[in-house]
Image (cartoon, rainbow, N blue to C red; front, side, top):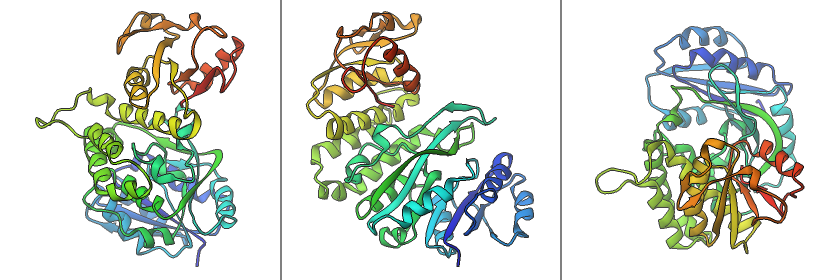
Length: 375
């Protein structure tokens, strides 16, 4: 019986599928099996999978299209391993991922249900878009249910599960063709803890055909999922009003319209998630701050920060084009105006946080006391 079962759900990702499966074959840790569900693909996926069907560690099942949650439920009934990974058919791993995560799980307490590491976000051609995806608020605390209230923002492809968590949490909810992973994570967090390993060992691919592009559908399902799990959140000490706030951010009005652009829906919810985590775990007494970054993160920071009792004094950006832009009544200042002791603590709200932090260090500003990376 293999130690690790790797589930791959394949649906019309023929362009990336071989790279995905080859990254499994290159794993330096060898005690694994792969269960592939071909979920009714209409491209060249079946032809590619035919090559792997002849390999001893690979098992392929073909079915008509049923969607992610139903396919995961099928796969979970077929696997044999003590541990489980799910690798999306357009993502891939570094060779050392399993060799890194399996020993950590082996040496973790029984209430650790998930061990995970970081990923880099890449485009369809493999170009790195974001060098790391696990920000400060994705490193789960000892109270993971609270950390999941405002959504899910880390790549599942670098997660190693104990198989028993799925038995305990129950099957994937097939009503949520998009977002079912979020629902499962909440149910797992109700009974288990998460452990983070600070290494970048995965690649999460975004391209025009990926499921997460449908933001309105994802957002609506997030609202339904939070509502479904409302009793779980309240059981873990979250106020009913706060749960309702999270739901309201996900739901359209009675006319089916959202009160922010569709492209910003996930970004706004993520900003709330970051300020909620900041308030709970990092700076509970923070009353005022500045923002670095006038993108979507900066646009929704005054709103989200204000909800958690933090007043945003200034917004900075390194772009000359954004200087003077009005964001929630705050005129954007150029980053040249930042200097030691000249402003409240700076919260960096940008995917380029590492690069921005390096620039602030050169200005003799100090981490934690003068600035903090929110990504």
